[in-house]
Image 1 (cartoon, rainbow, N blue to C red):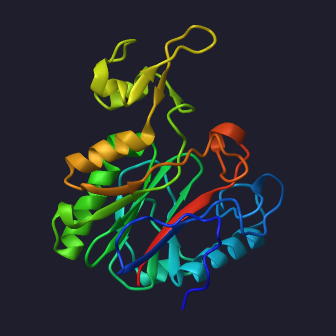
Image 2 (cartoon, rainbow, N blue to C red):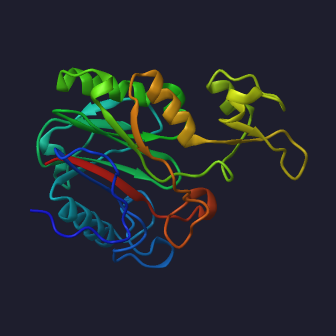
Length: 261
């Protein structure tokens, strides 16, 4: 049985009665200093006991056992196993996962990258979508895995985009545009200009501002997932509410989590 979700946490605005889902913020935990207060990242220099308690609070609020992935900015998708929810479990490296087991939840850690949660008729999923993962097909791979596990079509899947670094703050170089098949330039045209806006840095070097949420939404639509929500929050510009690695470097991690009810 789940307990009340912290009022500052974000809940997906979708119609999916078969699932429970949330995204944490900085609020509601026990960590201190730069990790205050709800850091769920075990790879930062936070106290392990604090991280364990913070993760426990999220899992309790969701009413699920959560599997936290060792994320590597790739495109691999795992189908979760119950034994991976144990604290001592060695979970394979991956940046997305799905679950077909009620009460066994997907947990995606972020601190500027985009978390995407998925609700299918008989399965749920989560993906860690930074620019490398997006360009590498992590969302498309997750959609395919959900369709196979749930016996559904992409149009039956709902996707929710959580908080990530916003388009006014996400400065990238030409390598990022090239990863998405975009020829770098000052004038990208109307369509590509919605995804990448030319803005040289202080030294006059060519740079662009990337819209991570719009890139994800575009790729989801191309994969057949038209039922989408979220994507309205900027982690970089709201330090009181969100962790941001680009803003602080010494930063905690938030989590977007989902489970079949």
